[in-house]
Structure formats: structure tokens, C-alpha cells
Length: 96
Image (tube, rainbow, N blue to C red; front, side, top):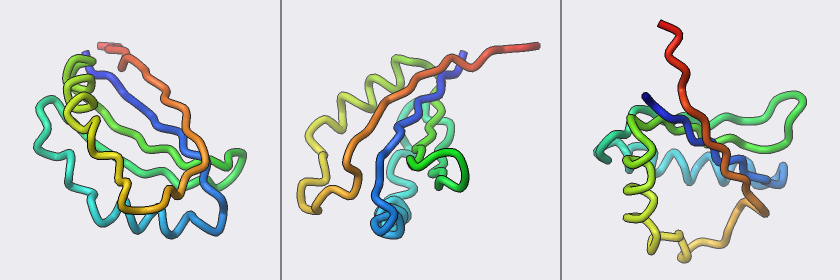
């Protein structure tokens, strides 16, 4: 069963384009990770002010392994764009 992990980022309006540019610069960096199934960056339009970083993984273990591998890669060379974040996790329900 796949899982979806959404990172909800609080980004000031004036920093949205910078966040998008940073994600565009590394948009395929997760592609080769075991169990990775997809990624989308969702820009707020109405009813929400946060950006959502949506990823889908084959298993929770695949996500946790990827997360552990990138623990030391915090992008410290650049000043943060987001002022806060919430991590949301969901199981994908098989309705078959």
C-alpha cells in the first residue's frame, strides 16, 4: 500500500517564487530513491496560504529510509524560505 507524505510549508508571499525556483533546481533529486512514486509542489490559490510538497512512496519504510539518508542535507548554504512546516502522512486507500 502506498503512502503520501505532505510537507505543508509556511512561506511569505514575497518568497514564493524563490521556493519554486529552489524546488525546480532539484526536482529530480528524489527520482532514483527506492520506493519513490511521485512528487508535486502545490502553490496556494484560495483558502490556504501554505505550499504543499506532495510525495508518494511505495511503503512507509521507503520514505523513512529516504528521510534518514538526507538527514545531513539541510540546505544550510541557503537562507530558509519557509518560516514553518507541518508534516502530514496518509495511507493510500485501495478501493479496488
